[in-house]
Image 1 (cartoon, rainbow, N blue to C red):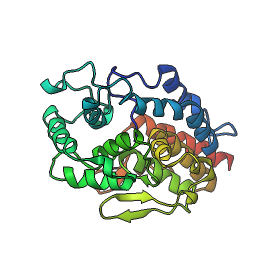
Image 2: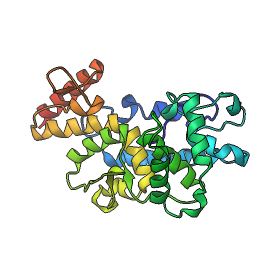
Image 3: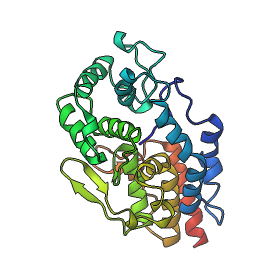
Length: 274
């Protein structure tokens, strides 16, 4: 999952780009103009694919090689920082990782010759094994490091690995496209190995970008899902997937009340149209 945050060290996506993907502009209303999968995928393909790849390249471009592992861990170019003194520039995904943890992870990962691995899965598996005892360096950190390292060796994931916000987007997409085949793996967690089981609108994006798409567009996918639920006369807005939390009664609900109200309105108008 590739974040838009992480400070001002590398300006990846312009404010204008992010403004364009807000609900106000993408999901205008639950009618004929309501954003569907094709609109979302086309927007990602035309406006976000290249900036994402440019950001991944920035972690090594004009960066001394002794900073590459640090940059892959942190997700930002640290050439202007003082990593040896614990002053790291960190991506939004790694913003809560302490300087101590970053140093410990760097010491472990710099000691490994990753050049002997030739598939993304090998890189990810080794990263997981090496950092399993580092508290706070979880599955998303392992995936992010492996993706950043692999990208800069032209080694890309062939499977879509599911983490955090990506899992929210996938839950929505499962309603929209029920034929998706999801595999559960003891080491790697949930993943999609057969990309052909995904909707054709996004299947050709490739695993790297599909993972990112599901994360970035999970709120838009939620609105589209609820619009379809309204048309189908389904049970109503799928509150559970947005924040994926449980209340005292064990049922999942949205924390964001404004989102709840928007979904109520989307569902009401769609049901009325149906």
